[in-house]
Image 1 (cartoon, one colour):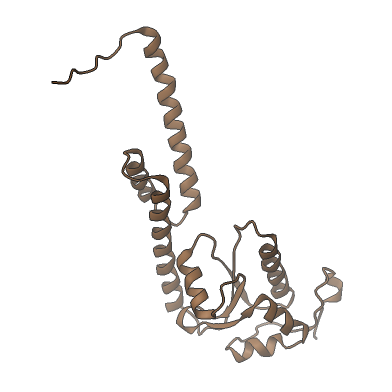
Image 2: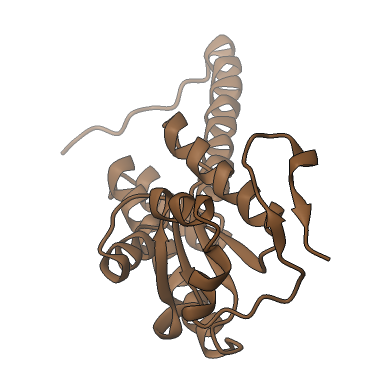
Length: 209
């Protein structure tokens, strides 16, 4: 028979156990908060349940993130379907961007299209695909393109691919952006920009009377 380890009653060792336990709890709380921020669409209880398995030695951190990524993708898919079901005919322009990337070229393209659409007074909506593997895969499948940003008119099954960054900038330069979106089902609710020059100088953007 194995002998049971006796608990120490040494006062110095007992004093050391307290701070060690507190540090361990602080580290666990920090990790949980970090994962809740990263996987913000996952219920906090679900994050806690997955972490409990990690602390019990049943899952390593790679497996934890995989489970939470799949859970967040499932939530995004449900939200996407719900939004598509309540769509108003696929008239709004949807710009898919990523706000969490270390690639400055991608950030530049996303910000430039945002500014362009705003200056052109387009009725558009931004959707962040960062950390959403399911949505990235669906966009790549629908658009036959794997780059970000991507633009659609409408969402879900009613959504029509409008173009990549380079394609849309070329159409804007040609002055045919309104006609391009109109052919895809978009109805422009505002006055059109008569001239649009992307130079950062807003005084060069004139609105037609």
